[in-house]
Image (cartoon, rainbow over all chains, first blue to last red; front, side, top):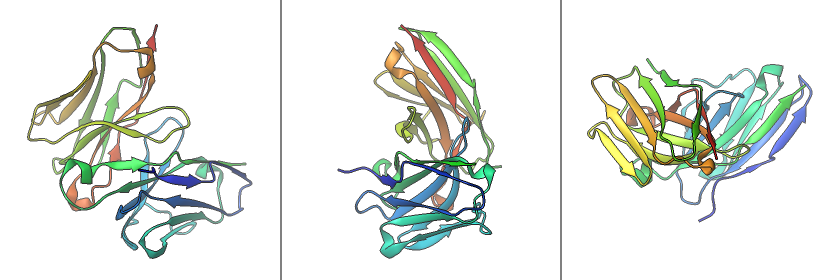
Length: 118
Length: 113
């Protein structure tokens, strides 16, 4: 089974520029998450999708961040305009379903996109 | 209410020793407690997880101990190996919030040969 795919793996931009990240979850996984991981910290949730609907975007800085999940499969996360403090690794994760079994509960993470804002 | 606090920040053990990482949570509504392992340049990967209806879960060299009354849980790595050197994150989630994970700050484990 293929894992969660993310691209690009690395991105360097200057502040005030825009950037977009792409995620392809594991096939059949209904739930998709975007996390931000600042160096030396644990991942923090930005947004959660269930199929193509937003479940939780309470921690997404909506003045500069946006995300969408097309047809309930791939997702893109965009930052416009970027700030220095947005330098981080952006992780995408997916989960199979809403059930309570262990296999349905597990979140599988992609390798992340490392963003450096200069 | 949503915090998960993890300690220590870093840990150095000798090969064959026991590594112990501790976490404490505040929100009693949490109902799922996973531990993730992350190697440099990789995403976190699930190591082992526990639900609050059991006090201990063991998988190979990895054991979670869970104390519901104290709102604490810990990861024990027996016979630690150099290949275990990584960053470990505890986390917690609850079904009513879509099972989003709240992570601890991480522990960087180094196992010396």
